[in-house]
Image (cartoon, rainbow, N blue to C red; front, side, top):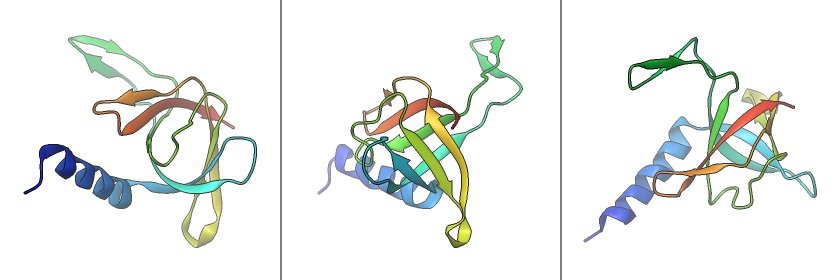
Length: 111
């Protein structure tokens, strides 16, 4: 019998595999490694408890296990079909561990 935490970890892995995009992750020293990220671009307005605010920067969500030492200044570069490199992003601030701590959430700027 599995417990809730084990099942949640399985779901997190499935989300990463099926919904994530390939990206090269670089700390600025050493070689970049391939990770799966989810990027959320700003919308015209987000709602929070009846208030509306706008977010100016994209947000990347990445598994903490893939980037355990993620910090401001680290970079992600999208890898498109055929291995073509796409847009590059730099962590604009320190990441925040979301929910159960398995995911990093970080605002990014173009690199």
